[in-house]
Amino acid sequence: MPSPQRTRDLEDVIDAVVDSYDGPEEINNLESAALPNKRQVVQAYNHLKPVVYMGFYSQRSLTRNNLRYALSEHLYPACEILVEQIGRALAYEERSGHVKAPWPAGWAEEVVLRLLRRIPELRRVLNADVLAAFEGDPAAKSVEEVVFSYPVIEAITAHRIANVLYNERVPIVPRIIAEHAHGLTGVDIHPGAQIGPGFFLDHGTGTVIGETSIIGRHAKMYQGVTLGALSTRRSECDDPAKQKRHPTIEDNVTIYAGATILGGDTVIGEGSVIGGNVWLVRSVPPNSKIFGKAKE
Image (cartoon, rainbow, N blue to C red; front, side, top):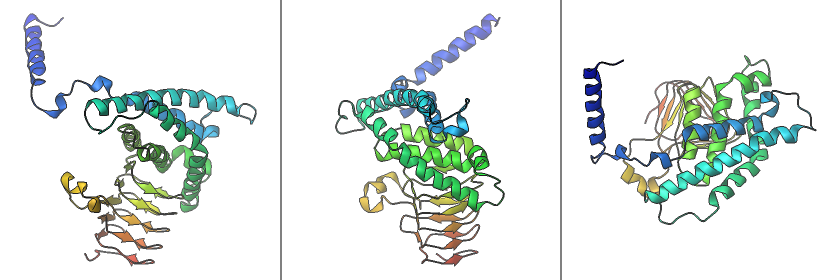
């Protein structure tokens, strides 16, 4: 039992915290209960991931005869959760005045169905990512080992799902999925980044890929790589000419550990190799090899 004095002290603290919510600070928003629920969004993602890799996640024997039932156990709840949570995100954006016009009725369900219809395509692209990891890392003993244990597979699976929702202009939800994967893997991929198939991120920890990054086919990167923006203010990004803030990495580029590549006008040409710890804020032509400190 707390002492009477401690109770009085705690009541004073509670009163002070309550009063602080009367101030002008942006974090004083009390409508958070109307926001998407992070735990629910993650639960939906955790239903979609087994749909992509069903044989790796099923707890029962699978055949072509029971596959449909096993998939339905995940797709129905994923659909229901996402429709609700996207609906909450849309309603919140409208109430907060963040949109000029409300979304049409039924839009959340339409978006979720479009995402689910794209799963066969996403599975083909993710298969290319898995094979890129297996073929690009001699330490990998099997495709199964890659799927079960490589952080890049968790990170890129979450990204490809979040990217579909981002491109549909769904607010908040794509970033929740992306940051969930970031927390699990240490790989920070903004859901807006465009990443071609056959992407391999070896080790991955500490890698940052910014919102307007474009990465071509069969790119290979190592841990600690940053595809970032030169320092900009939010107001500057209202200019369409400055909305591309992050680099473009063309096909078959390799970027070694710790390299930092910045700027929306920076293009790394096809087939180039960027060495470890390189700092780069200019474009390089195809088939370049950049090592040491690159000139600006």
